[in-house]
Length: 253
Image (tube, rainbow, N blue to C red; front, side, top):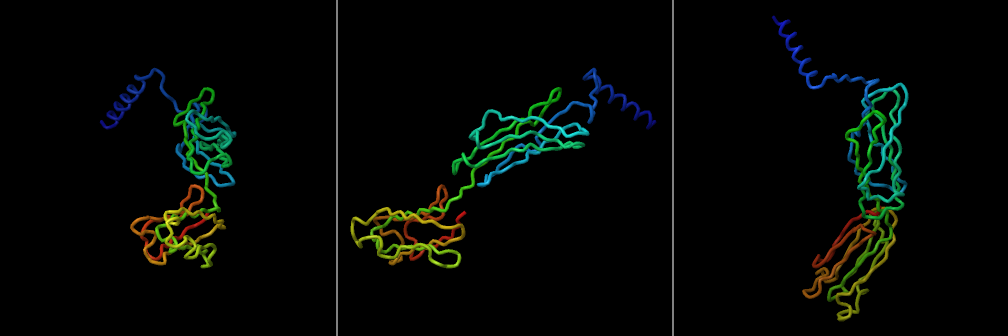
């Protein structure tokens, strides 16, 4: 009885499968239709000064005794400069169902702080097909910056404000002493903006903002402040009554 029931279920399955299509689908991993897909379709990377090569994983439904190559192209929606990328070919090693598409990114034409989008599409081989065929790379340039700018805005008592920058060893590498901003109690010195260009080698540093009267850069009338920047990077900033001292540790590159 059990054997008869299994036989009936098998017949129903075969009938149902073939009734939808006169030609049964036969999956052949050697001679069947070649279908390609990206197995990962979203990438977010940062491009270093030396450039970057990304291997986008691709899978295929068939296997071959020889290495195979397939084509990929850029599609609409790219915001990347033409000279910032190079799209290679898909390479599937012999006896393998998986391979890669290499995309090379060049930082030279990129702008600091801008995110770029690069959509890449697999092209169906002759007689074949593709699915999950678009992969998108989002990338930006690593910001390398050693030329910092410290901007100081004074309060009513500019002469009270001072600052120094120390390196990891504790050595002062840049500074402004109390009394430098002024002249003291002069209307001309209140709310004035000073900028200081400071070149720092790669490393870790500490910015120490100080106020002689210990009321920071606030006096009830003028609200001063400071900002330490390099390109699009803000390393430190502050305003108002921060007391005697405001300490910020930061890293250059």
